[in-house]
Length: 198
Image (cartoon, rainbow, N blue to C red; front, side, top):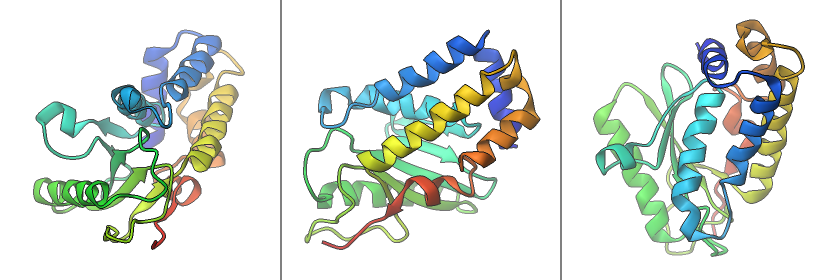
């Protein structure tokens, strides 16, 4: 269960509320838009963000040389296949980036066919390039939505840091995840939008 996994991760990682708030803030500082040199930092931070929210989170491409930049298990039957294009500076999503996301969805379908793959891209634009074919059902997290997500996760951390060991309390974590729309069933509706045709 997401709230239990989040509470266990946070309890294991943070000894006090100040370190929790600073730790979460540091995650978002690792994601630098428009700087390709920081792509690996962004991917590592995104994996860790997933863990902070209680999602089973991994980096298949880093681990086995294939698959998406990040994979989040949103529920037992849905996984977010995530490509981070935070280093991009284009005003549309290029064909090669769209093809990469499509390939990552196929990779998950091959490896875990009983799970629904939800394609997600972090990109400065939600508009598909004229030459690109959008991946069916894909959602895009733009810099504006990333800021909205950052505000929500910072508020989640602040609420849990407000009293000693509250972040280790599964019930408190569950309430805050739900309040800030950070649950597996609401995350992508709240913090990502559908791709738009060019």
